[in-house]
Length: 489
Image 1 (spheres, one colour):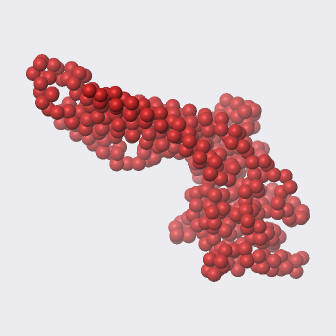
Image 2 (image 1 turned 135 degrees about the horizontal axis):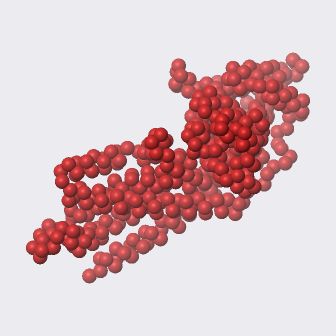
Image 3 (image 1 turned 180 degrees about the vertical axis):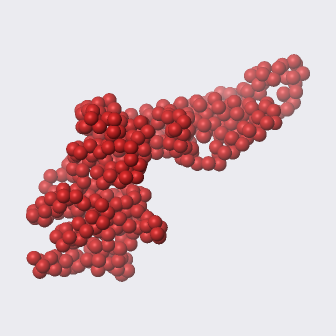
């Protein structure tokens, strides 16, 4: 057995010709992961933030060592690992990368090195009635977007009518569960355990919903490297190195031991005989259309709020007294001087103890108030651009300030403000993509999910761009027609 393991490692070292020349000369094995995902996968070392730690870090080190390389970590967003490994940004993609049938259609995929369980987390008071997904009909269930758990929830939404809620991280689903915004969370058992230790306030149902596996990802033409990685992983399963790493990160249990035994008992398989067919554009198009409707509705409501508040702020700064003008000017500068992403987080999460806004409402209010600050400056500038002799003539005729605003100043200011208002609406339409951080699945978020599932941004990106153009071009055309009509003598 020992000779067999030695022979396997020699084979792995012999496969190093698959590493690019640039990496070979530097004797470096580049691997990509997302440190934002945190322990036990990859996290910044608290004692030295320039370094990373976690069981994926240790596994990457084992692979690099047995290949005679030095591991080099490259930070990449979790949802971009698949695209980046195909671009050649790094040799291996690791960071809790989940195995799935269609992944093998686009990449070289290793033997799974960890088996996880998809588990439900619920509030203690609901533990008796929410045991399975079938019990959650009509309820809001959160998870991390573009994961196996999210795909399960999408399927269950059709079967049982539950409402899937997608998040960009695995922290806020549990925060929202405890706060009452969600009825349950479905995620990997090790993520659920970590969040239970970190935040508490919920229980994990003992019966898993499904099983999944973590794998090492390589570009589709790196099959020699994949074969070497498979030999190394199986050897590390056999000699106990992987078990030692998982135990160190409190991720080992008897079920993992059973999985290792099954994996080592069967012959290695590099290419699955059964692969899921790539999903066609028509499969995803209804979801993109629904997301586009959400984007349009959100943008229209937010722009309506922005225009209404912007008009009031501009009027206050033009006609108000000194204290009001100062207060409104300060508000405008604070809103314009801070990122809209931060404002959305504060509105949705920071103020949840005071007012618990639904995600869509928070998105409308956040974007609306942010753009109201910009709109107010447009309107204020337009009002002040009206020649003073016109205003003095209107006052001489005995018109009140309200009549002057309605009959003289307002119509002319509207003509001046129309073009920048149109630009702002198009900008708001695109900025609506930011609201996915507070669980609103709009067009860009749905496109990212589509791209992750098919392993490419080419078709999803083109469809997304086309839909955005279809939404924005008619508005720009209408604005130009109005400008021509109002500027006619």
